[in-house]
Image 1: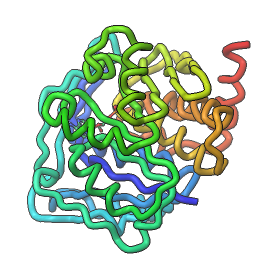
Image 2: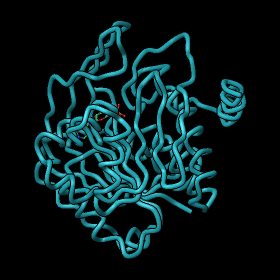
Image 3: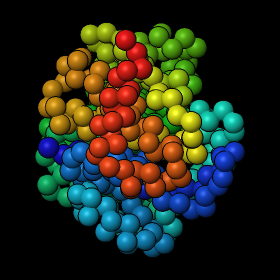
Length: 298
Ligand code: AMP
């Protein structure tokens, strides 16, 4: 099987208490593709500017990511600048430069239109919807977003949420979107909008899943060294979606296993800047951590 993903492909400038990186490769769809390609084929949709390194697109191809859906146009690549304080759970945005994403008009290559599993990674909800409308008959659609879009494109965002099966969202952003302080009530409110499953990301405190058949909690893997949480959400989503894509089932038990895989994958990306850790990640390390993870709770 394979997963179609649309979202930001970016340069990230990030500061944490443990170091900094300038214009490192990033973007929600990029983190997702890098991680999901460890498990399955990925079709990537997005736009980059003239300043984006061709070698990275070639590198993605070498990992089994189809980049036919990535347009390269004149202008600059999306740039996000942010920082984390000692509380690494929440990124503070300093600058969002949409650049080429400001005028992006996604057109799916013919083979992408048959996609069964779709991940609408963080980007303008108008673009997320444009992509979804071109997919003929998807079986499972998930969406991720953030405060930037909750504040600037609220109505458009709610329109896309109505079309998806799964919503991934940070806890504070869920409260903001639902205008409800209590997480359980906020998730239920979002379920009435359309998405049947709500996955609430709580940084180092794990992730909660509200599913039609019940609620499930996956802790975050306790780590000694965390360098940069950027991309943890997208990497979580990639582990989650790739697990379901491989299982080919959508029941509660499969979703619970997917939560564990999401948490396992997110625990790797934060061990280094950008997706450097994902680049050198071996299958055996994933298996080992998954086993260790399962021993965290009874
Ligand atoms: P996360 O997985 O939630 O840590 O997402 C990190 C990625 O989100 C970074 O690589 C950024 O480039 C990207 N990002 C930041 N702001 C936005 C935005 N407004 N729209 C789309 N992507 C963004």
